[in-house]
Length: 630
Image (cartoon, rainbow, N blue to C red; front, side, top):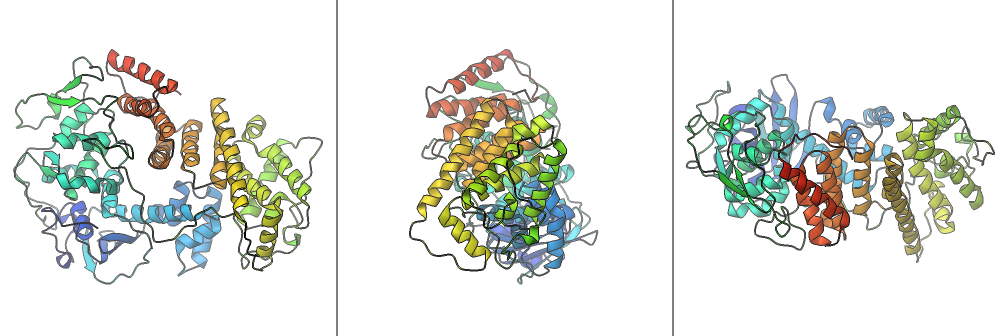
């Protein structure tokens, strides 16, 4: 899977790691030696503050990790990943404390009723975040054992992904700078590195850096040529590629990484000094059009002390015929393979589950006396007050968190006819729709209302179909549902409802109602979670609805990039990804995305308009990378 080790990691022997200092060599090199060397065992880091971090490897694949920090708890990671709500965190913590010895991911999945795809995503995120947290340990010792004592997941995480994630988010600026000095100053991409680039989990943001290394580049040249890329990201990319041997030094002969003394001091190699992280000043000169070669000189303050003047770097701007990143099925000379999803040994169903059906041991309800507070919902002649709507949301969400059945969520008896189910659904939808919540001024409860509205929709589709209702009742009463020969129409109905919700969400976006669009697209994802277009547009809608664009852009980019590689119509994902970059002030990257849309659809009017605006703006000169209004 990994291939042979490189010169940077050959000197690292796992049997000699015990007792060494964490800062004895660049931490990424240590992890790469275990991962690329196909090692099996457990790496334990004893921090100077008596905290323990553990990472488990099987044949070089990261399969488990632990962290003592509260921010790395499974509940917190699920919360930041938008898989659970803040109101569920305390309940999950109590369940985890009472279920010692159980798989913590399974406990969270049961409490939050996660889908199989969400469970796999949470499991991968937990392992990556905890393993990458080891980059934050600045003082401690190591031990590598052949025996693994921590829980092992049936999820494979490539060590390259951990190294890039840890270097970008957890490595201190000083250590990052010191380690880069050891790796070198100028690099070129190795010929055999291209098949491995997808395993770093790079996004389209990092593609310009990878393209620069095809011709050979240094950090100052990259920072000067790509001012829209965060300098920290550029340094982390170089760190990860160098630690894993994907790039080779061109400024001098390759060196071995020497082990530092326990005190953390070392004799630096005689190489040019990598400049510290400072915001580059705008270069003087005109901005060329996208069809001209870019003449970009390294700013004076970014040059190494001993570096003499050199010829300007010729960086060719991408044209519509040479997109900066390649599409599936297209090959170019400088194409970068798209990120591949993490391989999981956990089998997932081909079709989404019919509903979030509570299991019989957890909910064994025959009548509604256990939930007597849930009164039957009837269509009222007069609208509820704001206070009554808030109470309704709180009451039904409490039932949802307790694992109540779908009848109780709707406020019905289990003998309620289909017409009563339909009436209860219409009454609840009357108050849970985003436009109604906005009209009533309900903001704090909006997220709970969206979650409840999605579950109400599932209840409606389940309880109004006679066959599905019969199966659901059988499960509630502990019986085995009757095996049916024709279950495909139910799936078709579910997907049809998802298409309708998707259309309503897109209409809400066009009407500049992002909150309503989030609710509708969330329902589309609940009904058909395997449609990547649903998830992509939900990410875009959340980006539009929030005031914190920088935080929302991360998840939105990932959802759109997933659709780019898997959707039948990737031009839509390319277009909205371009809009995100344009709104975040990354005009050059946005321009390349819109040109990619035109490569796929020649007459895409909106993309053509965006290209004209951006080309005119770039021709006027450099501007600050401040987010623009939508």
